[in-house]
Length: 304
Ligand code: GLN
Image 1 (cartoon, helix red, strand yellow):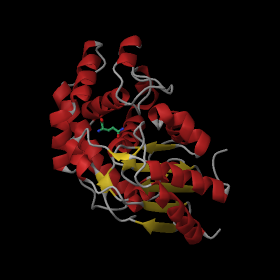
Image 2 (cartoon, helix red, strand yellow):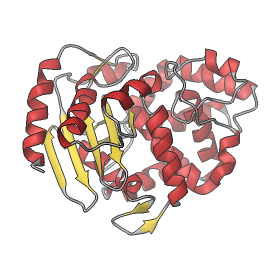
Image 3 (cartoon, protein in one colour):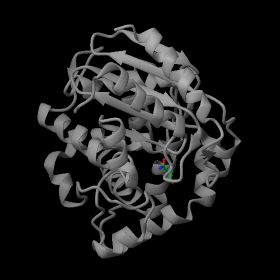
C-alpha cells in the first residue's frame, strides 16, 4: 500500500473543507488556535510511521484524554468500575445534564463528560498524585517525555466550565463521586489540557492495537478482554451523539476532542491520529472526520 501517496491525496481533498467548521471557543483559550491546520499520522502495528502536514504540532487533546484515564482506571479497578458508569451510547451532547437526571446519577458511558468525571474521581481515589500518574502513563504509552499540561487551558476551563461543575455536583448528589468536586474537576481540566502531536497520539494508541501490550516495553497493561471492551466503548461511544455517524462513515473505534483531534485504530493493524481545529456542530473535527473516512475507504481497511 502506498501510504505516503494516500495521505497526500487525502490532505488535498480535505483542504476544500476549510471554513465549514468553527474552532471551539467555549473554552476561551482554545479559541486562540489558528484554524487552517491539518496533521495526520498513521502508525502501523510493526512500528512504521507515516505522517502528513502538521503532524508534529501539539494541540489540546481535550476529550481524547478520557480514553487514557479510562484505560488507567480499568487496569487498576477491573470490572467493578462498571457499577458506577454504563457502556451504552448516549445519543446526547457530551455535556448533557438531562440524561444524568433520568439515569439517577449513573452516566451512560465513560466517554461523555459525566462518565469521564466518575472515571477521574476513581483515579483520584486510586493514586496519591493523579496528575503525575496521568503524565507518567502518557509518557510511557507515547514513548515521549515531552508531554505536559497546558496550565492556561486548564485555568481557562476552570474559570468557565460551569456545566462540568454542574455535572460534578449532580454526581455528588447521587453519591457517585467520592472526592471533592473541586479536586476532581481540577484533575479533569488538567487531563483535558494535555498537549500532544498527532505523532505522539498515534503512538499512544498502539496499546489498543496490540491488545493491551505496550509495544516499546512489551509490558502488558490491560488484559485482552479489557482491551476488547475499551475498543468497543470507543466504537460505540467515542463521538458523543455522532458515534453512529462516525461508525457509518469511518468504521473504526476512536475518540475525538474539541481541540480538533481524533485518535482511532484498527485493532491488530494500525492506529491513526488526525488533527484540524475546525469543528462541526457536534464538536468533531470536520477535516479530521473526512480524512479518516477517506483513509478507510481508499485502503479498504476498517473494522467492517
Ligand atoms: N474539556 C472539554 C469539556 O469538558 C472536553 C470536551 C470535548 O473534548 N468534547 O467540555
